[in-house]
Length: 491
Image (cartoon, rainbow, N blue to C red; front, side, top):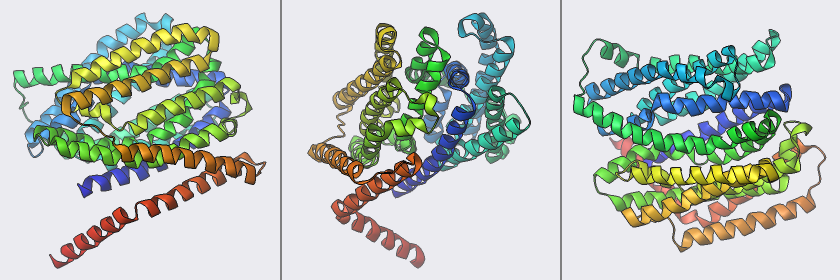
């Protein structure tokens, strides 16, 4: 179990570093592209994400589960990778025809559709390879490629293309395509021997196994697809009902909220474990790990929410004054609160997905998506992007509440007790009072220094509080580490 927490910790550090690099890149994009072009670039990313749901077909998530289940059976592992890749590429052919028919609806030129299709194919290959590697337990390597290497490449390539006088929007899209293509090659290099073996061997999957794999993948695809639609329907609705300028402004608020996810995504390392423990009928261990995850995430995300609450306009101004509006600030706070609830709920949806109750996760996402769309239609005309943020936030919170109840009823797992609630309330009050005091004590005109100083002090003091309140657990953990180190030396 300690190995999993090492992976989660390593994933977190890489994710944090990568997100920082990605955020700098987004600032560069936001400043070089005006809000309208930034909004158009956002729609390329949005549509490529939405349509890649079809080409990936849920096989990325299913590969995590199946590769973990067949661990040690290289023939099955390799065959599943080849089978998934082939199906994904075959689906891309009819999808290209669908994109041509939808050209007028999404507002892309023939050239734009070609760029979009290339982004979809690349995203699909990345998803399939990542699913395989994560199933093999290489979560840290996947995060390194996705979060660090990929973002560094994007930034470097974008700057080079701008210096070569390439149009700014094309430079942004080309940097995405090229960087993702390079990381696909790097991923493939990790499994090149396996791929060589596969191409010279017959499939070891029976017709029934293929059928079951596709059937489960379709269910996962619906869940993942609707989940991704929930994440992207806001931008699609803004593009359809408002304009690309509003998309760009909204995306800046969303960029900040995505920082909360950096504290949650490392726990994807536990997905194979959930599947394994469930198959072993070890439900108690799943609940124990879930409670631990919730406690860890709570310590990390609550301070960030209050930074958004009190320094929201300063944060928006980093992208440029054109992005600082009252609606953008309110959208930021609404989204931040919903993502805070999502974070402290823990990876509750993955428990349903990694067990036989995957259909409930599907139903939850369908309900949330319908409510999201209805609320968007009702609110977007009157409240603009603030109404869109409310619709998105409400659907996210509702989805989590329903999932928590279902996991309790179906599996008897409940991630909260009085200690969780005390932790959430006490940390909320502490950080609220702390930042109110700091605002009155510290006055800096430079927004960059102000944000860095506030963030450093707030997280520094939270770390001190954590080390005091959890000193017993920390001491026990360190003693175990020393004991394991001594045992390894003796052996």
